[in-house]
Each structure stands twice: as structure tokens, then as C-alpha cells.
Length: 191
Image 1 (cartoon, rainbow, N blue to C red):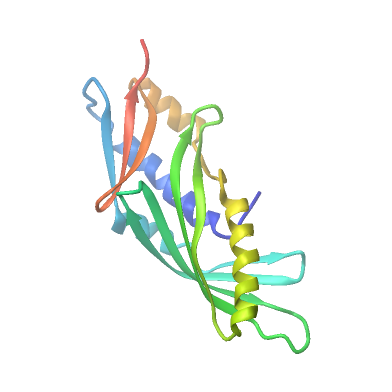
Image 2: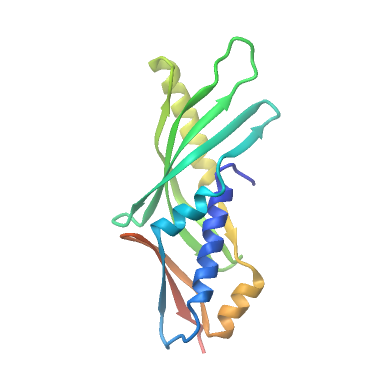
């Protein structure tokens, strides 16, 4: 399923792969960590915005101005974006505001994907609506976003990248949010 927020995560995940492989020149035995800074992540993510997506041929959603907030104490990444939902109905104003999501990341070896895990909407602000309308949008939008994003595939590792890593005796392991960025553990392959 293609979601409007996924292209920026695909780019970040691809960057993780490239950085992991680039750091494998002289791998020692045992696990190895590859660090990706918050600035590197944001730089790569920002190049993918604005993101526009049309739903059901009616609603056009635009996401813009991504901001990251690392949550190492929870092993989660927060992403805050501005959103605009254009409504084509006469007399209806566009809906805009800010959406903040948080999620964990995990590598799924069975299909070689990087997936969001435990996605949740932390905040959904709606500009220009009365409290009752905003509460309805928040409830429906929050539930929909969490349902669509939980376990969403954000990157599929290329076969040749994993083969190259395996040729050096490693495979992707745990991905942790640490102060200042992400840390990918490269685990030795069983012998």
C-alpha cells in the first residue's frame, strides 16, 4: 500500500543500507554498529517533500516541512509535518494543521524489509475548526493513520545489498534510536 508519508522513509531506509555497506570495509568479528546522524536523516527526508497524494479521486493531501524528534529513551522516532487536505466540495474550506507521529523501526528478515512498528499519532492539530469539528477529525484521522502505518513497509532491501553484506559475513540486525541519530547493528552470520 502506498502512503503519502512513506517516500521520505524509503529514502531514509535506503540511506541506512548505503551507510551500512559503506562502513563494512574492514569488519571485525562480532557485531558492528553503523551510526546515522539525525542531520543525515533529516537532510535525506527533506529532499522528498512536499508529498502530495490524491485519495478516492476526491481529497488531495499535501505534507510539507518535516521535522524529526528522536526519542532514544523510548527507541522511537517522531515526525512532525504540516498537512493540508483540499476538499473539492462547494462551501467547504480546506483542512490544515500539523500531524505528529511516532514509531519504532525494525528489520523483518522473512521478507527483507524495514517496517514501522507500533505507529501512533501523538498529536493532530486542526486549524480553523471549532472544538467539536476538530475532535471528530482528530479521532478519525488518528485511528486511520495508526491503522495504515502500523507494520507499514518503508524500505525493501535490495537483494544485491544483502548479498554484499552477507559476503562480508553480516546481516542487518536491531535498529536503535540513540541520542543524535540511529544505530544499526550488523550481526555476524551463523557459521
